[in-house]
Image (cartoon, rainbow over all chains, first blue to last red; front, side, top):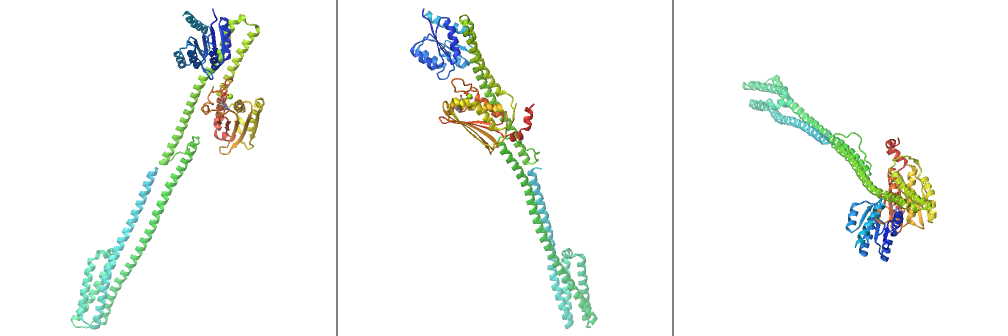
Length: 125
Length: 482
Ligand SMILES: Nc1ncnc2c1ncn2[C@@H]1O[C@H](COP(=O)(O)OP(=O)(O)O)[C@@H](O)[C@H]1O
Ligand SMILES: [Mg+2]
């Protein structure tokens, strides 16, 4: 079975670093990005199974990433994380077909469970 | 007393005076009229007395008794008319004079009657009788004439008196009116001047009051109304300030939540990952993990320190100080940054600055914050100008920090003083200007910015002079210095 690929976008470097360490150990292929722009550039080159993105970022923000991903790779699962637990944004994000939504501080176990759920469902097809 | 009542009162007094004056004048006129009537009568009498005396002379010359009859007729006529106007005459010259006139007339009539009786029996009037007759006639005529001229003189005197009474009273009334008007107007003018001064000072933001007890007139009412307005304005302004503060606390809380959440999340993720991958980590990696935790706590510490700086009690270490000295100390602190970024420093410090009353550490922090922003805005080259000057208008000291950096976009200008507003990709807390603004405001000063994109930015810090602070808020400082 090929490794599932996960893209992590957060302007906090530690989020990417830690998530990568943890997820790689679980057998995922992980790439991290510090801003939306470079992530979208990368998505032009290759698709990912899961995109975990921070919501509030300078320049291209999480919502823009979500829309672009859904347009280009509709099967990609998007998970949103943010330090800003703002419900309005959450609802808008969900309407735009975000798979899951995590306020910071993120529980890694929950994030991983969510990723598994997403991939399991996906694999079921 | 109300001005309204004062005006009523003064008008009443004036009307009273005029009525008094009028009745005086009326009285005098009446008197003149009576006297005048008398003189008219007296003139007639005098004329007939003259006619009698002429007839009397004729009688003595020609001894014609018929003349005497004529005289008697004239006397009767005169007596009749005298009786007729008795009232007028007594009013003019008194009963006594009237009676005397009558008595003289009766005397004369008696003499004439006697002479006629003599003549009718053909006998010549004696020398003695002629003399008496002439004497009686003379006396009657002279008395009557003297009285007439006396009355004429009296009329003259009354007119002269009335004239001066009129003149003086008119002057008196005019003076009274002027004086009273002046008093009222001066009062109003004085109050108005106070009102003008007060409104001017209110418009400058000093909510003073007119301290002295307001008078009970309309100006007093105006002054109390203005006093009420001043305190109401002050209350409103405080409300606005309060709600602004609340709004900025709102922004702050949202910002704090966000800012604290990131490092907290980082620490949390490090901890979770650390536990997960512990077995696979070498010693160096584990220490690296803990270093990263330490970095994140340092981030938190900086944020918390900035917040505390802002909320710290107002006048903790405020002392009399020299602006230029603080500028020099700041320059020492930022010199290294300037050198690294190859930025020229130009100092233009005035030597006529007033002493200020500041917490040196806090103001230095403001200067460092603003200079740091300026240096960051300029990048690799540019010029930083730090100038100090005396503002003659307000007596304040001003510090200008001007850079030749990229400038601030107009749409950001309103937000740069907001907590957590930053345009910096990394390392910006967005608290620097917010904290600086709070510090300067707490010092009773002002912080404003001018910027043009591409040309650079200038921040202006004004600080009130030591003298002004001591004058204005002596008691306030005492409250805070405990
Ligand atoms: N001298 C300056 N030139 C250009 N922009 C500035 C300058 N000073 C402040 N700013 C803008 O104001 C923002 C807020 O500044 P500040 O409160 O000090 O926070 P920070 O420096 O952490 O971003 C900055 O991010 C920057 O956009
Ligand atoms: Mg700053």
